[in-house]
Image (tube, rainbow, N blue to C red; front, side):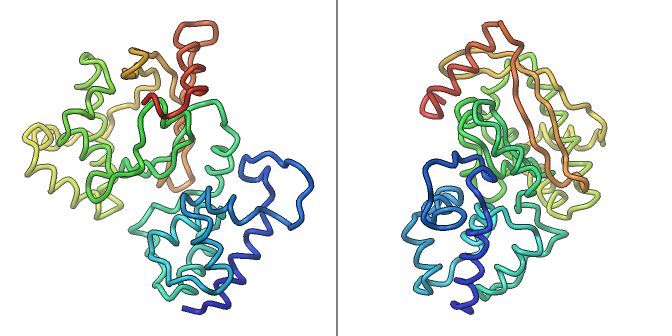
Length: 274
């Protein structure tokens, strides 16, 4: 770990960002260039003290998980993320097998969606980042570990996962998740490994996997069942990266409807009601 170079790199990347670059208000006149340390810490979901110690050459060697969070908070490109890992004494993640570094382009869009539910997902169905309205609507989907990071794995192993959809929509959604995993297996061995695990744990998954579907269209009109507000009919728009490794999902409701009123209220009250 090169503490001096790591600290310098973090400071320079932080100073290169403006509040408006990450969806924060500019506020009053700032004494330092770029973002404040506590703002980066918030964006990376870590303590300000921990991040400050890294910039002051005093912190312990961060784990790969912490480095990925810092890279996301500082909106680093893939090359910058790899450089960050090497400065901290880690091998840079293999780009072919990992898609947990959120696309800076998608993050720039997400940063500007303050009152609209939106989240970035990987081609394995892993929720990489959510804004507060998305957490209020769908619950916190970023805290899962292991195979449970994948929405497909949770769908076939955790009955509570299906409560988010009306009973009439569940069969089709299950088919879509399996078809998406099947398509991903052609370019990522992790998808194949996940499918093998699910085939053992879920007879329903094994039957759907055997059907070899890869073209179940994404349902852009969705009904979400919220524990406090009941059914909310929404439109879901998708924005993919060029390599299709990640997608930004944005949920909106038809203006003037009860669904729009529910969505607006959710955006105000926040994730505590999810």
